[in-house]
Image (cartoon, one colour):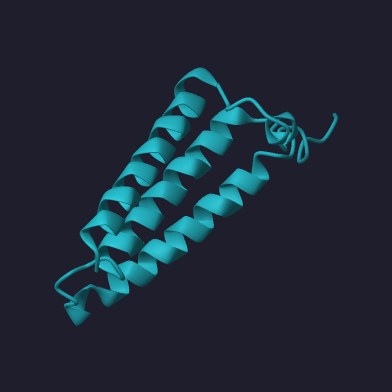
Length: 106
């Protein structure tokens, strides 16, 4: 595909990795309306890292791969699955932890 799309994809993936790393290490989120919903920023950061890794695998082993070797297709699909898992983890960060849900009193 176009070389410019590869560069744009790499920049977007790198920015997402930086934001996810900041959330995991410092608990920092980008300011805005959506950040108020996130109760567990570190979990959200792990979800972001998963999402970016999966998106990168999909893009660079799938549609942006210049060689179009069919052997990489399963890896591109696996990248989509990892990206979806990352979105699920990000969604779970909006809810409180289930730490005491299974405890019984004696």
